[in-house]
Amino acid sequence: MTINNSSRIVRYNITQFVVLLVYATILSLLVFTVTLDMLLKDINKTTIVVLITLVYLGFLMYNYIIDYNFISFSDNGNKFVFHYISNRPLNKQRKAIEIAKNKFDGYNIERSFFGKKIEIIISIKTQNGVAKYPPLNISALSKTQIILLTKSLKQLD
Image (tube, rainbow, N blue to C red):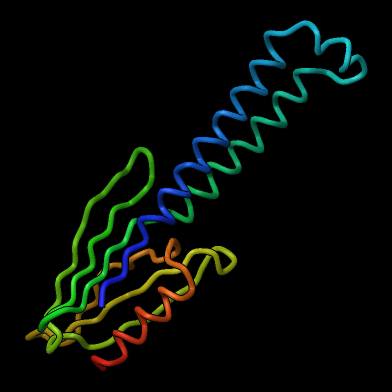
């Protein structure tokens, strides 16, 4: 079985780009046009600019905290492989986890940030006992993909 969330990541990137364009357009209209002064007589334009900027920064912080990842999972053969790429603008990390099915020991799913950030922690058997991989963010997977992933991993337990 193979799981890939590229379509969701593309939608996420398009959403981020559209929000940036809307933010830049509104900001430039407020700052560089005089015609809006007549419409906004009683409201200070600086206040509106600060509020819109705070909303946009909140949007960016939320997306930075959630840290959506492109994920490709495959369990074909005698091993399973996770390929993942962080979607953070300044921290694009490309990583892969390849684990033989006979060394797999289990997994744990943790939720944080009001249940929006979902991470999976994979445990493997080593010569010195059980080792855990660093958490892998699976927030960008759909519910169906998460169910398929957990079913695939449960077959190995």
